[in-house]
Length: 125
Image 1 (spheres, rainbow, N blue to C red):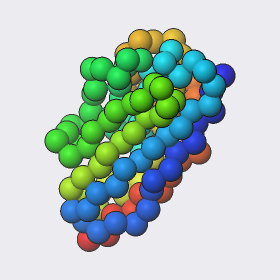
Image 2: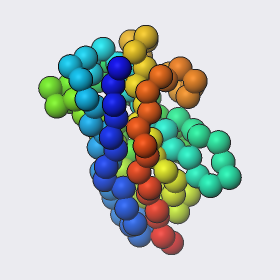
Image 3: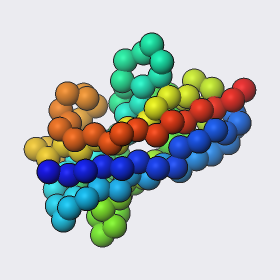
Image 4: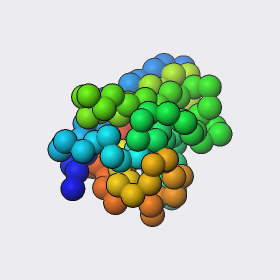
């Protein structure tokens, strides 16, 4: 089992940047495919970005390609989401998620067994 704790959210103006972090407990972090999801009020949770167990093959939601970068440091048990050129439509609660069964990161929320508590990102226009 793994526990996930996100940090780095906040209020930023459009065009600004934020870096989210998600720290995982335990010694088996490298065995999990990891991803970031987000959920805006009144909307379903959506996949934002993910990486495989080795940090390779990053995958992104189309609307964040070229603006967001996902990475992980297995030595630090941490996954990151660097967000640049933020837009008001990026406003949401951002969650990290861990999948212990697959090598690569799925875009389907149902594939993930472990979730963090979320961190709020608010982008003002």
